[in-house]
Length: 429
Ligand SMILES: *[C@@H]1O[C@H](CO)[C@@H](O)[C@H](O)[C@H]1NC(C)=O
Ligand SMILES: *[C@@H]1O[C@H](CO)[C@@H](O)[C@H](O)[C@H]1NC(C)=O
Ligand SMILES: *[C@@H]1O[C@H](CO)[C@@H](O)[C@H](O)[C@H]1NC(C)=O
Ligand SMILES: *[C@@H]1O[C@H](CO)[C@@H](O)[C@H](O)[C@H]1NC(C)=O
Ligand SMILES: *[C@@H]1O[C@H](CO)[C@@H](O)[C@H](O)[C@H]1NC(C)=O
Ligand SMILES: *[C@@H]1O[C@H](CO)[C@@H](O)[C@H](O)[C@H]1NC(C)=O
Image 1: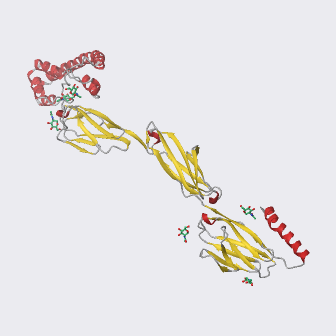
Image 2 (image 1 turned 120 degrees about the vertical axis):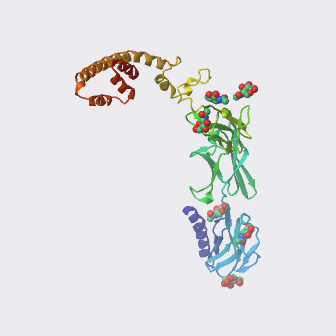
Image 3 (image 1 turned 180 degrees about the vertical axis):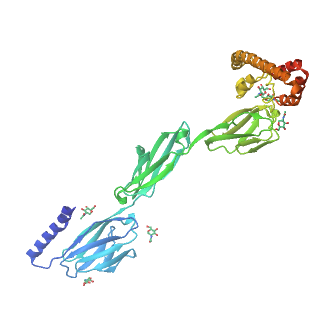
């Protein structure tokens, strides 16, 4: 650049100077500088003069219309202003530059031998932030076609598609619109529902933006997919009087607007309250038994989930009689029953745990019972013996003996003799 400048300015100057010295006359020259400016900006067009002797200076536009004739405006265009006219430098400005102002501006000196130089004005049009056009909507399992468009730039902008910091190569097309270019880059990518909301960006690079600078358009993938439906079931078992609360969790793009609750082969119970995805039934009764369905649909499909409600009798587990074996309910529906059944006197043949428990319990019970009987008999014999031996000393001991037991019957037994105490033993066992 420096060399070019030296070449372009000094060499002609040197030649002219030499020529002037040879001619020993006053010798004039003019120099023009190329200018690059952004569209809408202001260009300065400068003509440097050498050995100016008052000759007429003319500045012309690329169509060779005279803009200024020795400092006087010639063309009626207010965007041009003469800002400087000295014997060394003539400078005009052009505001609000458009691409149509591009070209060579002439600096001329009218002397006996006419000198002229051309200042080339270049106009750059930086791109606006590009736009993204969706050519084909993204449906799960299909492909999406996205086009990034930069409609106007000069020179043509460079476009890049980026996803997760990586470039996706696109098909680039460029159109020349006279002075400016429109550029587009098209990509096609397969989409699944997991891609819904994925972030992409299209970047536009351009010399007028400076190195490393870019205009970025962010785009989020909108992938359409059929709904999914799942009923979140209540935990534990439900008994009469409980309330049921079901939530239907729905996905889908677009998200289904209407969620429909129904009961298979029946109408929904009167007490059922529906609010959006929730179904609530208070004070359950066994008439509410049945299969409840939640359905949702959008333009891409429909989905349903069901929940089978079984309302249990609220006395069945606290009574001594378990649910009748004829019911078709699987035993696994009774999480707490096996231990309860073993403690009752009705062994359940279906429950192997209960049978094992009974077998191991029987010998200990028998041995314990026999021992208790023996000990009791010994105590009774002792008491009777002592009672007989102290009988004459007073009747207060009978009251003491009765204090051993809270049953009035037993007190009578002691008073009446040994036969009654035998009945008491049976009772306690
Ligand atoms: C000015 O631009 C013209 C055309 O682009 C070119 O031919 C010329 O060499 C340039 N002059 C200078 C001094 O850079
Ligand atoms: C041209 O303009 C300059 C500067 O105003 C002036 O000095 C010169 O005399 C003018 N030349 C003619 C021929 O009018
Ligand atoms: C700049 O020029 C454009 C057309 O080239 C025009 O639409 C716009 O109004 C101008 N702006 C100013 C500030 O003069
Ligand atoms: C179950 O309990 C609820 C309240 O706790 C009561 O209203 C209902 O009558 C009971 N049902 C039966 C069959 O006992
Ligand atoms: C609904 O009724 C039909 C015919 O009456 C029967 O085949 C089906 O099993 C029933 N469905 C339910 C969930 O009860
Ligand atoms: C409801 O389901 C429970 C549990 O399976 C069952 O015991 C009961 O008999 C059923 N009631 C009706 C009316 O179907």
